Length: 138
Image (cartoon, rainbow, N blue to C red; front, side, top):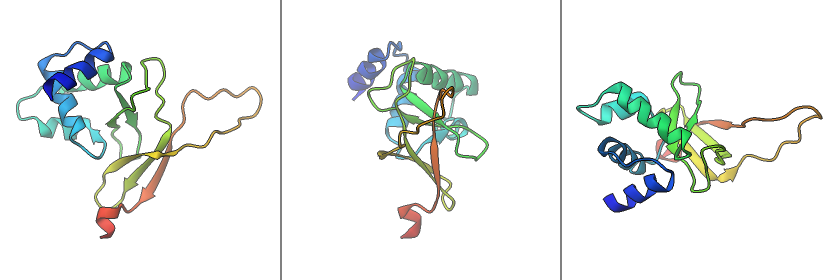
């Protein structure tokens, strides 16, 4: 498992330090997006600045994408394999559950291609759906 995590970091040109490996493993074991506070709470002895810089490095290199779910703090989730540092290809729907307050990536549900008026150029797109997740409905 550790070797696979190291390879994932190296594929994105990220030096595999101990902290980066721990953060990647933490993200890999989650089924929902996390905030910096969630990450900080998951590590007993960690420096908030180091965790923040790790997330930012991951985002810059195309390993994670950030999600604005309206909660006031960005959430982070692992990218699909085809994301690169210059362009995130995570054009899928995100779902925010009002009950558990978790944000989920729904990669099977793509954001439709939007035709913008002449002269308009999109830099990014996001689609957030809010409601109740399947676990909370059960």
